[in-house]
Length: 95
Picture 1 (tube, helix red, strand yellow):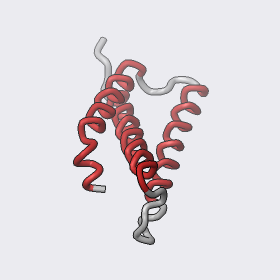
Picture 2 (cartoon, rainbow, N blue to C red):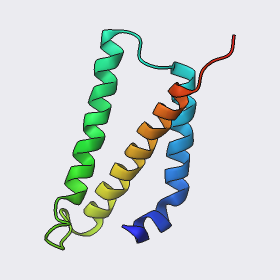
Picture 3 (tube, rainbow, N blue to C red):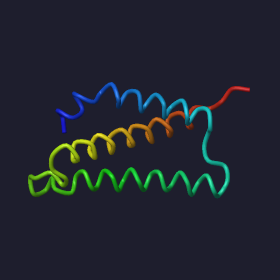
């Protein structure tokens, strides 16, 4: 996993910054529909992370090869995006 982060750090940083900008622009979810959509994105991030880590206990990747690398990279970048959205939405706006 450390190798993955060392290779994909520019993409992770970009996902974090894009998420922060999106969260700052959109703000926290206001209605029921946006809250459900935000919860679905968080569930997708959790599911992707769980799929990427499923084989870790056995010492084997859950999805081997190039597809596993893509799954792990997507899970990390989605998690970075969600964290960026939370950080951006938490910053108070000035009037």
